[in-house]
Image 1 (cartoon, helix red, strand yellow):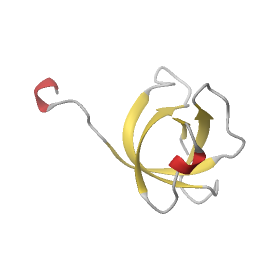
Image 2 (spheres, rainbow, N blue to C red; image 1 turned 30 degrees about the horizontal axis):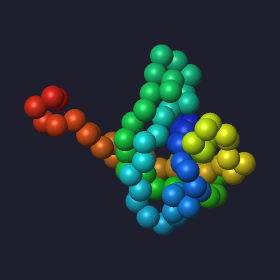
Image 3 (cartoon, rainbow, N blue to C red; image 1 turned 90 degrees about the vertical axis):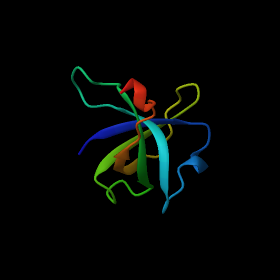
Image 4 (cartoon, rainbow, N blue to C red; image 1 turned 45 degrees about the horizontal axis):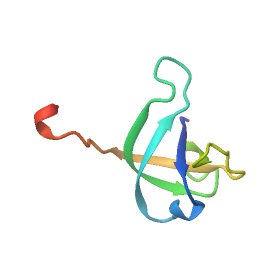
Length: 84
């Protein structure tokens, strides 16, 4: 189970039952902790519904009281092909 974090302005941005494209960052210990990824994900308000955990923060870093679960569907590569 991986742990992820996302910054949002409103919890309504985390709509359930849809595939979302979010910028998430890992909370796993080690050299890659806090590494950001752009990814297509599925989110659930039930903490045990999906394989990974999701911690939510608001714009100024305030931690949301509710935890979510997350399934990483695919990473989105935002670099133009000439830079890959």
